[in-house]
Length: 113
Image 1 (cartoon, one colour):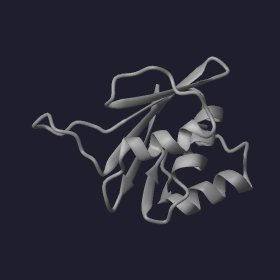
Image 2 (cartoon, helix red, strand yellow; image 1 turned 180 degrees about the vertical axis):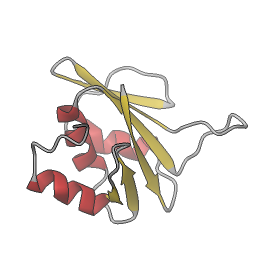
Image 3 (cartoon, one colour; image 1 turned 135 degrees about the vertical axis):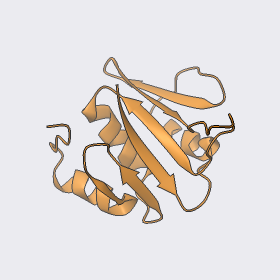
Image 4 (cartoon, helix red, strand yellow; image 1 turned 30 degrees about the vertical axis):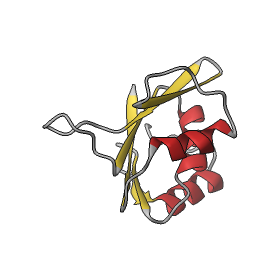
């Protein structure tokens, strides 16, 4: 699986993300500290990373994915915000609104290539 990291200036509550995602998908049953979406046999897992002391980092969210198609849809739903920073772990780091604009301008963008 690959991972996208979304970082906010403020906390990014999973409950907020859950409400945005529920408008588009049925979320899979998961523990309260993570979200999961399945679409066409591909999944995205969403969670706050843990810090060294074991507590979570509420200003960052990790999206673990295997399919670009579904993660692109998820990012467009939850991260179209200039106050978020998206790192796709493939040498692209942009504010959320610019990352989403790039996705919309080039829906076939394969950042892993």
